[in-house]
Image 1: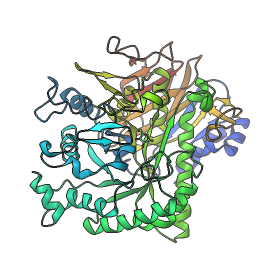
Image 2: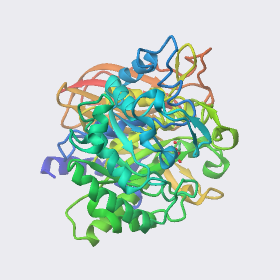
Image 3: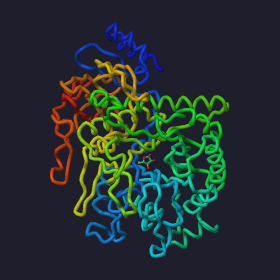
Amino acid sequence: MDTALLESRRRFLAGLGKAGAALAGASWLDAIGYAQGARGAARALIQQPRVRMDFERTVLGSFLEHLGRAVYTGVYQPGSPLADAKGFRSDVVREIKEMGVPIVRYPGGNFVSGYNWLDGVGPKAQRPTVLERAWNSMETNQFGTNDFVDWCRLVGAEPLLGMNFGTGSAEMAVAYTEYCNLERGTKWSDLRRAHGYEKPHNVRYWCLGNEMDGPWQIGVMQSREYGRKARDAAQQMRVVDRGLQLIACGSSGTGMPQYLIWDREVLEECFDQVDGISLHAYYGNTTALTGNSTERFLAMNLDMDRQIREVAAVCDYVQGLRRSSKRLWLSFDEWNVWYRARSGDATNGRRQFAPKLLEEVYNLEDALLVGGFVNTLLRNADRVRVACLAQLVNVIAPLVTNDTGVLRQSTYYPYAWALRYARGRVLDLRVDSETYPIRAAGLQADFARNDQVPFVDVVATFDAQNGQACVLMLNRDLQGEREIALDWRDLTPTRVLACETLTGTDLKAFNTFEQPKRVAPQRLDAPAAGARMTFKLPPRSYTVAQLAAT
Ligand code: AHR
């Protein structure tokens, strides 16, 4: 670290109250740049990061599973007046293009563990209808891999393909990569050409199965058994294409009994053959997880921070064991709020085609927490290379369709802001914020912590290409406005280009087709641009500021 940076850090820390400094040393929050501050305005010291590299946009990806109405009537609805010649919903394409979703994971999720990719390619009239067993639904296979890749090209997203490690063999997984990525002259590449796709799809990212530790998963496995299968498949896949980025299945949540042990044992088997490991997490404002406390709920992105640190530690541990120079990256390829439409009829398709499953209705407090997750992912973007908001359309999604259009749920806004404004490098922040306590008593073990939570959660990015900075700020204070003073060190904002906030008096308010703007951004008065800018964040709010800076 250069001496100017060290000196400015020293001055900043010296400025903190004594109690704050002591706590800063003790709390794990210090590792993500937070110190407990005195009452009053929060303060963020913003500096250029040490690593002068732009973050990968793939950390802001999403997910589309053959589940409920995600694919059928979500993105694909031939015969609808809203569909194009290929059957893709044009209104949904427009939304996703405008959002700029960089990568989309497909086709599952639990679905993938019983999926035969061959059923979904070739002439549509010859594709079989099958009983899909993860969600007990009818699958017509009218939308498959080539259709998905076409759709990705249309919306401007990169495909991230999942492989069937449940009922599927390593051989068919390897055949899938050959079908997608090999130019010509082999059985599977020539089959793709016969299906009308002369050029290979060149899919870069691949998930080696899905949640293979979950008892609910078709073909659930033991860690070492899975790790050896992943190693074997990966080794063969690299013969097909040396450039693949392969993601091993990590634990499917912090609540799994084998959480971290699974990750370690899997990596002990396949560390050398893979590039990343997956993390999944769903959160909810429930009796078990939060004691139905919104204060606790809005702190849950800090649980995501902790999960990232814990899984990264396991990766580094196995790296050490193997005396390897390879540092694995993390793929947080399923994350969201999901707790209402999570059992019973909401998860059982009852052998229907495109049944209404997992159609979670998102309210204001969910959107605020999604903002928190975006902050967490961005500040960990040096380690998390891929992340997917699960999911994109209709199923636990920011976008919902009906026969006449598409609705933006509350959670659309924080995600869309990050996609639109957060670019370039993630800046280095030291945040000094007053905190509030959360208590462990009575909560599910993986979320039970006695801790101090900063009222203000903030991240910032700077894009050297266009000279624009973005600041994303969560105010967890349910009662009061909070001020945050931004102290810019190596950059100086010269103009405020945009400043919007998502807030409201009713944390349970949500959007409907009849009332689509109940939870929607409002313009917020921003301070004058300059080296010190004090924002006044409304209570219960998530705010974005886009700034020109030099
Ligand atoms: O995203 C919904 C489901 O949640 C996925 O199919 C599965 O991977 C996870 O358990």
